[in-house]
Amino acid sequence: MNWVSLIGFTAAVCTTAAFAPQAVKAWKTRTTRDISLLMYLVFVTGVTLWMIYGILISDYPVTLANAVTLLLALVILAAKLKFG
Image 1 (cartoon, one colour):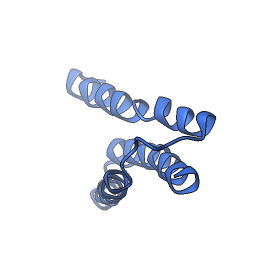
Image 2 (image 1 turned 135 degrees about the horizontal axis):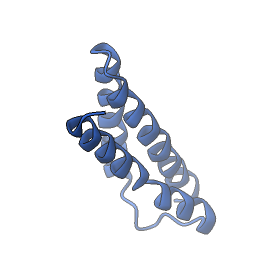
Image 3 (image 1 turned 90 degrees about the vertical axis):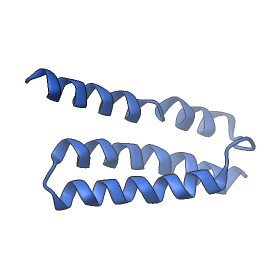
């Protein structure tokens, strides 16, 4: 793995993993009062488009990173819709 790929991989791991604590907290506490519904709707749309883009250009790191981010963001969005 060259240094450019390492930077990209590290960035993907960091930006994807950043959503895990919020997803866990939302499900454990059952509270999402301070989370913006509009922000997560826009974010999920953007991540979905990035994932589709990654698929269309056959860029597996982009596809995988955005698929995992989408999953975590959907958990938070579902918690927001369920718990308000």
